[in-house]
Image 1 (cartoon, rainbow, N blue to C red):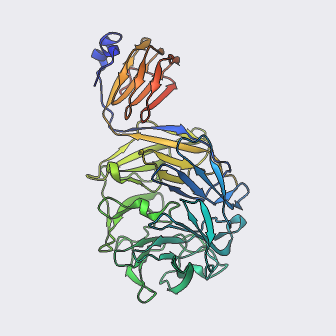
Image 2 (image 1 turned 60 degrees about the vertical axis):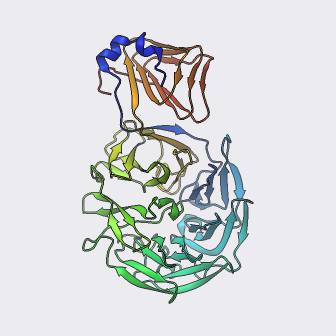
Amino acid sequence: MKKAKLLVLAIASVITAHGASTLAFDADFISGVPMNQARMAHNQLALDDGTVLVFGGHGTGFVSLVTAEALYPGAHSFDTLSMLYSHDWPAFAVRGNGEVLLAGGSKDSGIPGYTWAETFDPTTELFSATARPLNRLRTGCGAAYLTGGKALIAGGWYTQSDAYAYGELYDPGTRTFTATGALNASRAYPVVLPDNGGNGVVLGGYHYTAGTTIDKVELYQTATNAFSVLQESLFPPETGWGVNTLTRPIQDQALSNGRYLLLASRYNGSVYQYRLFTYDPETRAIEPFETTPALPDSSEFAFLQPVVDRGRGKARLLAFNMSFTGQGNEYYLFSLDLANGGLEQSDSAHVLPYNLGWGGLTLLPNGNLFATGGSVTNNFDPVSETLVIVPYDQDVTQICSSEAINIQDETYQGTWLIRTETTLTTAGAVVVLPDAHVSFEAQESIVLGSGFAVNAGGRFHASVAPVSCEAAI
């Protein structure tokens, strides 16, 4: 790697004093392209080419939405797509060929009211009604395609029907739904997972009118169309650990070894405890995934479900800082090394004027996270904002100067954090190469010359904020 002349000339004394140090993990939080409509409780899908799709949810005033939106790679705005029906908290599952199933959902104000269902083909961008509707009014349910090719839907929210006590099996060949036998534990918002034998496992969720976490883990057997108890709780003999429906496809949670990674929580009377766990579709074993250090409880952070990055051997967990006393909501990003369980918290945080809970969150092909929507205070005031979260785990070459920094004719590779207590300017050809990540921070101002460029695949971030080189970095 070519070292910047800056290292040798402009601030050699500073480098001697402070050194070029290494940060294990940090992240940038960058405002993204806003959606055309404020929404929350929507479903989100990222395609292999980087296209992001959002479906339904509810908008301002808790109104169920009949639109979807697509953000294509390089686009400066979302395109609005018209669904056939509104879907707020529907059954959501993605087939192996990419086809999306959307079934049921709530009327306005979250009231279960629909049996209609449709599929979406991402190659043609067409929505098509299923041949027959669901057998029961259903919302707040879990769904996943099983290895035999059919999708299992289980559970449901509230008392407009008894969907909370039953499941349905969707056959994409006939585009019809078949009712299953009764669940052993009625539940809303459960997680459905496939096993390798064509059956399904249902876990988590809570009572269909809210409150109590459901302990029982159930096995659905396609041969008998019936449910049986697989184990009495997620982590027997412990009870009270729960996990709820995700708004992205369940296969996004799959690790490179075929297991699935999820986050469970338990309220102990004063705080929520958090525990990562894996599910093995071959053996149906559910095992805690130990981290070092352990995940903090809700006296410090409230965690969202992990975003799995199989290709990079990482999982990312967004966490709301519970001790933040300023205006808005402060978020950190945690990074989990899937090989050794090492857990790291980002050095940087980001304050939002809204909450990311019940928004969408998916992994992009380049390793960034893309968050959509959320709400300011409750179900009646969702937002249209999006957020790009850029994690980086590489060694960081850090420079900090109490004097002005002028960078001239430099090419950057690797990861750099360059900070000054005064001003930072560039002149001549200053280029950020592909896969490089460069951050400039200055207390007074940053001026980029006309020769400054970021090549495709490179990442650059600049901020004007208080800087102190005396602080440990």
